[in-house]
Image 1: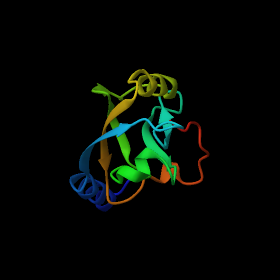
Image 2: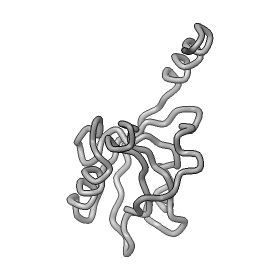
Image 3: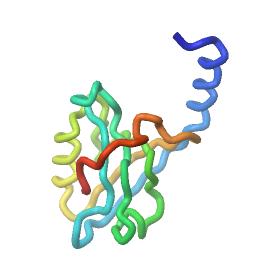
Image 4: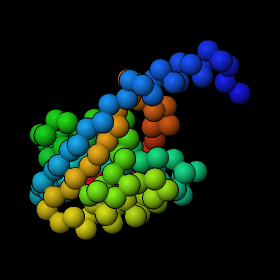
Length: 119
């Protein structure tokens, strides 16, 4: 159980979160990012796991590893499975619109995880 001080620190971190809208055009090999999480992973929120160096996400520059994906193409990702997220990204055709939340610290759940999908 977190202490009062830890609770206060977590609340301060949440206040520092920033939201970003990102629109990406599909490249030759996709959008250039991979995701981690989903309902089947103990209800872990969806996060950006990797960004391909030569992909559209890297060229755009707004998406970062550790960003939490809040919406995909206008659909809230809460309780979404990993597979549903992938299908939603693919169903957008040549464009994907993301709303992401970025905190000051990357989520520890991403550390040491392997890549499941390169969108």
